[in-house]
Length: 446
Image (cartoon, rainbow, N blue to C red; front, side, top):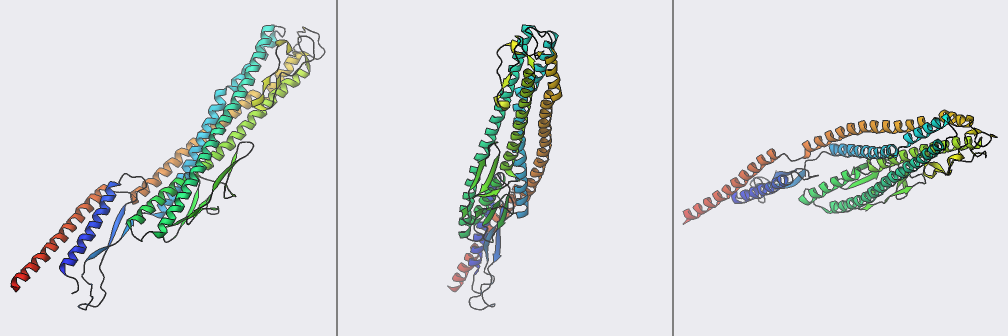
């Protein structure tokens, strides 16, 4: 027999020591994010010749054949997909909540209502200077409220674009790291501890990247990964040891678009998708706000042009500027309000033109339009909130399923620790027995 008892026991001790090292590593990393439980794959030392022939390795002990990661690629892909959806929903919801706060806190709706109420009070005595001054004050307040709402929306958009730009930069960093991990994986030994650590790093980077943009992955036999951005039909972001550049462009209306090395992508998941959706909603809200401000200004200025002010002069515009951000009051005196019809003398108490203005504002539905805008935003926030909660539950279930399959169970590892310790001790006993037998045989020979 080519292998003696001492060699067999020594191989068993080495194998048990390797298993103990892996078990200790599992226990030490039980709470580490992204760590996948390892297990030692052992095998008998196979025979290289026939029984009782020279070079025979049968019954020669055991050896560590490799270190396996207990991972399920399907569960990992599901975690990445659900994480991408959840991050998109969270980013969009946060953007919508900021829009809602910006528009509601500006108080545009209440300012419109107060302006219309001041016009109604003026109708009781169109010659009263104090009531004319009150109308002018409420008109100025309304214009400023529109300005505040526009500035707040611009600030929300700027914040969303900053976050998206930071996410693009982070995605490029992660892509570069993935390319470097690919290079190291292609050189790592099969079944080695270093290879298992690299695979953990690869999977953690993929999950991090999925939180930025939805990705499609394909794995080579050596563990390297090819990543496409925006889905399976998107351009390659990582191929082997090289990574492409993800970029962002901003349109005049504040919306954003993305590209990988110049090839356009439309993310359907990740924070980039959520930011794009939020910025689209900001642009739509700003457009509706601008339209409403322009409609109010046009209605008031048209009524002014059709009437006569308190001094008997043709009415002049009350408002100037474009959109919600540029709307401003240009009249400086309550006497500028053209409450009387065209051609009326100075000091006329004929309020027919004022009535026409109130009727035009009512027909235009300024307050109703603003209320509808607020309602639409609130409805979207509520709807996205429900979506977020559902996606959060789905993502949590996917992660729990993955952790149950690939996470470290301390009870199991404690049992393995005792088992491999006993195996190591048994191998030591076998070596001691081999030594005792050898010494006995030597003693008999004497």
